[in-house]
Image 1 (cartoon, rainbow, N blue to C red):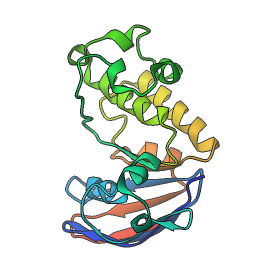
Image 2 (spheres, helix red, strand yellow):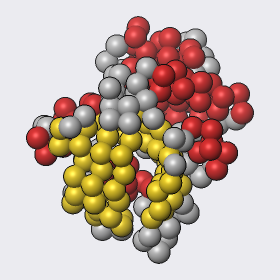
Image 3 (tube, helix red, strand yellow):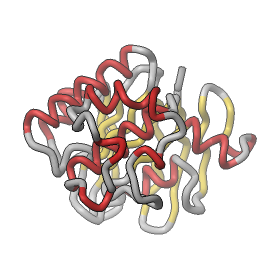
Image 4 (cartoon, one colour):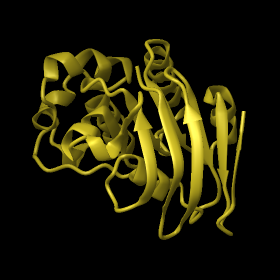
Length: 200
């Protein structure tokens, strides 16, 4: 569903990275703040200029219109953006998103809630629901459970495991070493000195 091959991907602030991630697998990206985790995710999603190849199921990103690429490879930042007043306005199909929101332990009336009144953790989970509603082939998550309590973290991880089981590929940037261990088929460790090491 989402086999991803990365060859010598680089941009200012990011060392060259080469890695292969199979469909239904998770690459955990770890490293200190400033080591380039977010830059790597944004480069994969083609949100910033970068050099090198990113290949999805044998198709290079340069052969795919950018809007289509970003529908297939969706990036969810640590601080998601919002542009409308209520939650449901940010979704293409709330009826399809509602069971995802429920699985993420969001309130039953969250669709009509003003985004400004939601907690940081609720907004983070809504951003994840918004991405999953679009059924990406590859999901890029930047610290998806940082602001969450244990119950919400468990809910997020359960939903992500279900998607991995259906073949979605996950690239997970996290400071949580235990979470990386739970999810990763392989790990990419970035260092502030611009070196990287990939491992199973």
